[in-house]
Length: 540
Image (tube, rainbow, N blue to C red; front, side, top):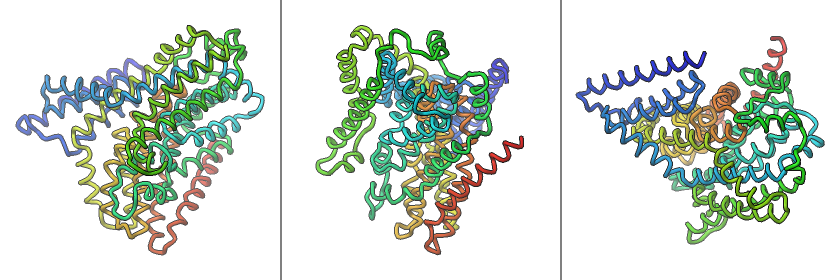
């Protein structure tokens, strides 16, 4: 659809929604209660539809925010304006201040590494040691799995480190964004020491199990996360793609157009030239390794220090369970930035003036991600104000019935909520207490149900264009955000469908005490599906 036509369609949808909301409110006597009903999910759904129609994220998210504010204020002009500016955008910036600082500092560190020539040196080393596209994809996946502390940190670090390698093997930035996104959240959701494990532990209300114990025992049943890894490895080894991803990969292979977002003329020339410029010729591989190691070490320290400050006694696990990533990550990244600048000056790969020039460059590189993240968070604020939690809770309470089907139902509900709201943490924060009440703690289905909730939250987050992790993956890969969403959606939905079937098996096997058998079946289904898809694509 042309941009002009898509803008017209978006305008029509927005006007129609405003009219519908106004009519519904008038029919309710001017004070219709939108909160706690299906209306709570309408703003994010409209934003998602508009994003997919217009291929433009900023206006789509803003429309969702306005519609949510319109309902929350019961169609009051001044009330809507106040909701958008104060409870929407202002609270979004305030609530995400720590992560926004973290993003800017990460952008600055990436700019420092590029300026020093570290990225170029790593690309040269990789081009000699990683010979194939399969090797580059698996190396990207492996690095993503190794950086399991936090998904934001994962997305931006893997993107900056691996892009020279994937570019040299003609892997499109859309494929790189998928590899980043498909490892970032899933690995954090099955790593006991991560910001996600801490968040899950904080949502647990079990009387029998501690938060971290429940998290660990649920890992083997987190089918979506595990099967996503199987999917990536299998499709990489088989060496094919399908859906819109295939178009981007074919274009990259045939024309060399990798679909890099925001590439300057100088950078494009440098990429095509394939050689280091004089300004980065002094850079060595160590100029990438040391900054990345320092960044990881400082961020782990920041998370642990913040966690230990919040508890009176306990070890590393307890500290991670109590840490605040919105504080710990900025602490660690600020310390890392200072150390890295000092290192660069000692190495004499840049002057102090050149190092300071990287600060605004890092900020500018992160402006698109910061803008989308702010709008997405504002939209989540509107959804929370409209009582999405209460609506979903009531719907789940009515879902009790066939016990064997409940894990699959929980998975689907978590997928839908996470997709519509764009947040994994918000989703399992809503659903874990409900799931804990549905399944008895003495049943093995209790762990399966919790895992289904966590897996569904990751799945919906993975698919959603308003998810912060999806946004960070686009930013890390310097890929057009909507292109990233459209190319990875068929892959994510494929794994989600297989995960749903696997949860059906888990529910059926529970009575026979062989719930563990469901995971091998899921793995077999993923491999069989991809073998079938490869044969099908070969015939096309």
